[in-house]
Image (cartoon, rainbow, N blue to C red; front, side, top):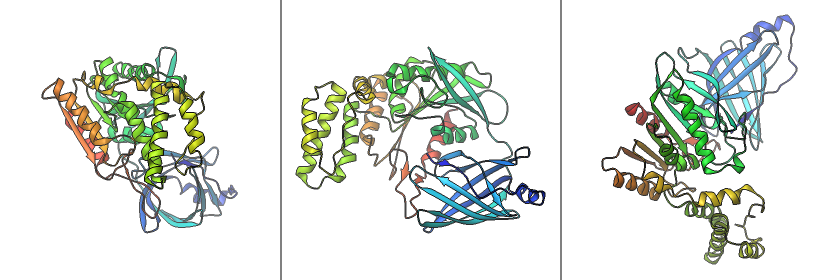
Length: 430
C-alpha cells in the first residue's frame, strides 16, 4: 500500500497569506502524468483554522485506494505547494502552484519526472457513511469500519475476509466504498494483531480466522441499519479459500464472493505459487528440475511435517543458484500454519455450500491455478445441488490481485471488468 507523507518548506503564517492558504481547502479532481500515461486522482484537503494545518487524502480508482492519508501540507509564499509522497521503495516530490481553482506542477521520483494538474470540484452530494466499530471473537477484540450507503432503511451487507499476512482494513476499503455506493453496506476490519485489533495472526488457527469472520457477521446481524437476512461474505486468496468454511459454520450467510480461491489441495496451491516465483530465474531445464525438487521438499516439510534433513541438504546444494530463496527460520509461524492449512480440504467445504456463489479469478494468476480451481469448485457446487446459483468469471490478463502488467509509467492498472463484475453480480442478488 502507498503511504503518503507531505512535507515542505516553512509555513508562512502572517495574515496576508491566510486567504491564499484557505483556497487550498476542498475537493480536487485531476491526474498524474508520466511516460504518456495519465492516472486520474481525486484529492481531498481540509484546513483546521485553530492549528492552521491541513488534513488531506487521495483516491485512485486505478490503484483501488481511497482515503490514503497525507501527514501535512505546507504552502510557501502565496501559492507554492510542495508535497512528498513516500512509497514502499521510492519517494516522489511534488512541486506545484495554486492559481485560483487550479493546482498544477511537476513531480520527480528517483529522476523520473512527471506532471500533475487538479481543478476544484464539488463534493459528492450523498457520500457514504463510515463508522468505527468493534466486536469480539472470544478474548480477541477486533476493530474495523462499517461503511453504510447514504439514506435510511435496512441494507444488505458484506463482511470482507482477509488474505494472508498482516492485512488491515485499508486493503478492503476501496471495494467496501464501491459496494456502499451501490446500496450494499460493508464491514472491513483489521486482522487480529494488525492495526487496532488484538491477538496475533501469526499464531492463529483456521478456526480462529473463521471465528473472527463469524464475529463480524454476528455484529452486523444486530445493527439496525442492516438486513440480517441479506449478509454475505467476500474473501480474497486465503480469505476466499476459507469462505465456504465460514458460510457453513454461519448458516445465515446469504451469499459468497470468493476471489482467487484455491479449489485444489492447499499443498498443490503452495507448490504452484512457489514454482511460479522461482522458475523465471532458472537458466536450464536441469536447473528447473532442481528448483522443482527444492520447492517440493519445502512444501512437504511445511504441509506434511516431513523431517527437514533433506531440505537442509538441498539448501547447501542450491544456495548459490539464481532462483534460490532461503526457507523461513525454524521458529517462523510459516511452518505451523502451513501444517494446519495442509489439513484443510477446500472442496469438502464447498460441497456443503447452498447459497449463491461468485467465483472470480485472473487468468494468468501466478499464486492459484485459476481455471482448475474454478472448474473444481463449480463442479462440486452443481453436483451437490443441481441448479445451484454459481457464477464464474475469469478475467484475461489479470494477476492474483486483478491488476494488469504496468506500462512505461510503472503504475499498475486494475482489470477493466473487475469492479463491475462484483458490483453487477451483487446488484442482481441484493
